[in-house]
Image (cartoon, rainbow, N blue to C red; front, side, top):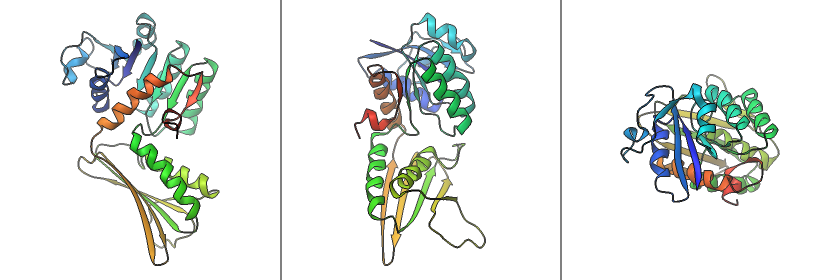
Length: 263
């Protein structure tokens, strides 16, 4: 049985991950962390009821991880918090599933270094949906044949999402750029802005939209649109828990969802 811990347990994604773990037979939640609601049962924030797991203060992360012999820590919190907590978990020998987006280059370097120095296993991905990762594979193949077309990425999310553009949109841009030998990115346009050979990336924030990503390849007299629409954040939680089971069987290193799904 895999012992899992969760950061941000009281949040939107945290609650879904708690609920999802209870549906997987080979993994169990043994610890939950947040910045409030200490001592409350984590089940209060889900539809599964009392689980007998009290919410711990994230400041006690190291002690709680060691006490509960945690195998893997799942983190879908904020970039600043992840950059602090991931190295702590790594020093404890705990594997990582990181779904936090908006990490800076410096934060990512700190996290990667901690993973390598402590010889743990980690998956770092902007999106744990199976469909989105297949979407990445499709746009990679399309870009090889449509490199001379104008390429635009449009992403839409709910009005509470803090970072823009989304990590998924940036990953899509990187996938396309790698496939065609490098492209400049332009984030939105205003004023006099003639189009060059760049990839345009546009973010929309509205309502309660879970996630909508469209890649547009436009040529003369034709266009191709490849789109992924997330109907529920449950797909991200399910993918993350599946990844948590998978990572514990691998050799030390940093992996992506491409590895998990054999893409």
